[in-house]
Length: 578
Image (cartoon, rainbow, N blue to C red; front, side, top):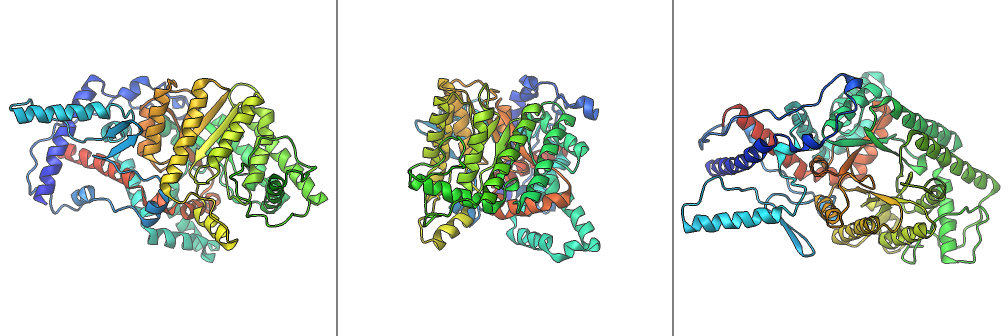
């Protein structure tokens, strides 16, 4: 224990020398480039203008605070990544002293900076080595380990709540118990529901969601804006079963978009929609089967099919359909036309609000229909300037890169602005189970390394397309993976893409990978957080689905926990004069 505390003291002294010297030159380098908050007039608050000056650390005794439980909380090592995280790579990247490779560039993150002048040849050699390491680190424009700068505008109580929630969702038995409770019939009884909803709101809901109403969402967006972040409004709805529920969901989506007019101007970057919420799931499955059969049998005619972009490649799997499907009935064709009209109405609402629309990707069994509907409406709304409608491509699928290439080339030939959001994907268990049941190979890459490579390749393709000016377009890089964010940021800089360019945005879920979000924002990129919005009870199904889909991701937020713990420990040392 004495050795651990001594090591912590030495590392802290060196880090504090670096931070104090850099922050004296510019106490808040990010704030100097941040535009005035657009929300002060709404909430009557003012952003923080400078960092609080703190005491320099003094010598830490090897016996100091050994038995202090609060001290142990800040010094305990985080748990190792879960098996699911290692297998599926839910955005896990080691930090501190790790080497990251990208072609001919290596990024080394060193936590040590010498504060003393050299006094011997060995000291000179050590300083030269440290300077070389620092020079290599300069190639990494994110600086994700500068916790004092990353969390400079985050108060300690908020950091403590963040750490508590991250530890909570990392404990899988607690996640299982919470899901069981929220699905329990007892939730229909007010004596059980009311206290349960209170606990949910003051823990995971507060951590992952924007708020129940406009006032709460405004406060959330105010805090995010002060950190250089925007929001993506996510009206959290589950699959629709008929036209009645589709129409009801559409009204909810449109109301959410109209709500942005009451929110601080510029605080919301885009809206998002699940097609399965505005078109019956069974209809999408039928349409997907017919589209796959037409792709497999080019002479097969679909009289209801509208103009669209290519969304299936020669690599796309066809095991979902074993024989020629029956044609759509008159009623199904009417339902499909209604789905087109609902999506069109949603796009019109977004166009009036000047708000891009991100169409989420979903299960492979319905993805062809989702892509078909998305590209059909995009041809009408993405004709000029920046795209209004963004499709989503899941790069854990083996056919992701060729499908992106086909759509990008077709949109360029037709003079269409192409918008895409890149994600890794969240339906691994479901996809593998379906493929296994049909005795077919999994559509998902066989290793997480291949998924990482596919994601980075798709991102590079879009960045190079934007840089070369081959056509109007934009990309949203939705990732919690630090390495992918780092590689994309370096690639953008290498290609000369101007930081703050609206054609390139990064995105993460609220409450996840906050260190990456803040580092990207501090580096000058546009960054948004997905914000579920609405009453707690309405959002609960969304929270359950996110918990079930992202078990590995939630449990493997080791980097976030370590960064928050490091900053809290630094503040504790400063407060007690160590």
